[in-house]
Length: 109
Image 1 (cartoon, helix red, strand yellow):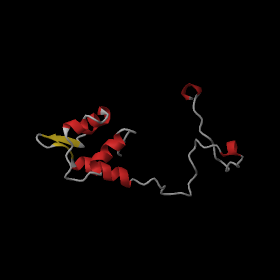
Image 2 (cartoon, one colour):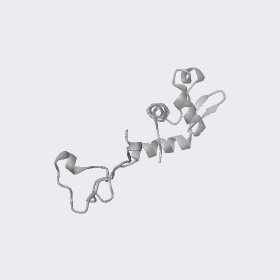
Image 3 (cartoon, helix red, strand yellow):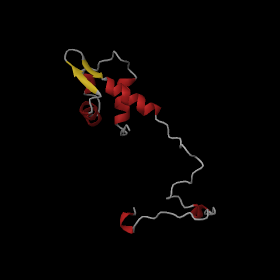
Image 4 (spheres, one colour):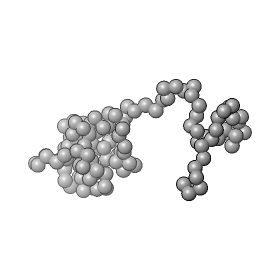
């Protein structure tokens, strides 16, 4: 599963939407927040090519495609909702045999 932060998403998008032949110069790269930039380098989603600049790798393009195409639909939508949802809190009846999972007080926010 691809995980992108609120900064990582726009950083990867900057490369992915610029096309496969795009190279970002060092001076242009310096305008971006370096935390997601570093993350992309560590993950090998971008690489530096001397004389050309930073370039999106195949792994980076694959990550972008996976991130863009991941579905969140349930395989069995007729299954009960998450056990953390308490229908009685909203005035709805609880189904027979259904229980609500509760966190210990030490884990509560």
